[in-house]
Image 1: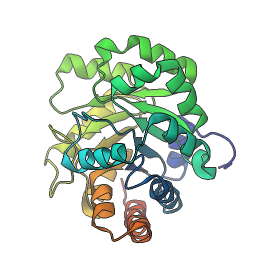
Image 2: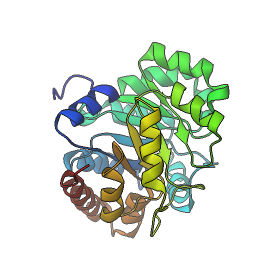
Image 3: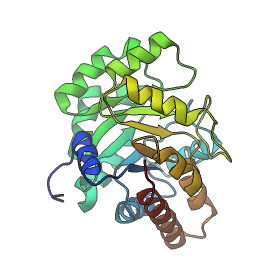
Image 4: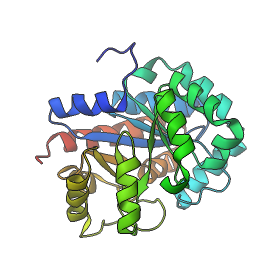
Length: 273
């Protein structure tokens, strides 16, 4: 891939399909554990084999996030992290076009910042996807239209508790890929994933022509490989934040996270669908 040209989500998945690979999508909270280390972590996980990266905008009331990501969000806010600073940092990152960035934000910060301005700055910074956990398709028409005009994919969360009607709506209106929530509840590393998960992934893949990526709860190589056998992508968040939290200093955090992502990448590449 050309490192100097933007890579859209659809073209990234097309490239993965050609190489018979599944997408590895790590999550980082912007500004955590500090601004400098955040960028070093982002560079490292791209180098270690991430195909896309979800970047969380820290918010004071992150309803969909468990205590691990909530804690990282609070520390990032205490560090003075704000949307302008995040986009400035991402915009200066040489690696920003190597993989599509998925910007995750709750609706209030996007609205307060200005939707059009947010989308424009996001795209310039390499953000080709937007994930808003508290946005439902019933209320998303206006922002969907602005996303299409801006060339940013609006991605909805599909939970196992979604009604048949809501599921149909989400599958119809999602752009980029379907973000499948593995369990009911908030984010967080879990010791095991639901036994019915792979069956559910298979069902959703039959109902949608978009790639299906699974997040919430995937914490180790065994779980990532299990999901990768069926889904098109694996999203890992809280497990990465936990590694950063347990590391002694910036250098160790970057090294430990890079090693973890490299291990997951290698394991996923050896999985047969």
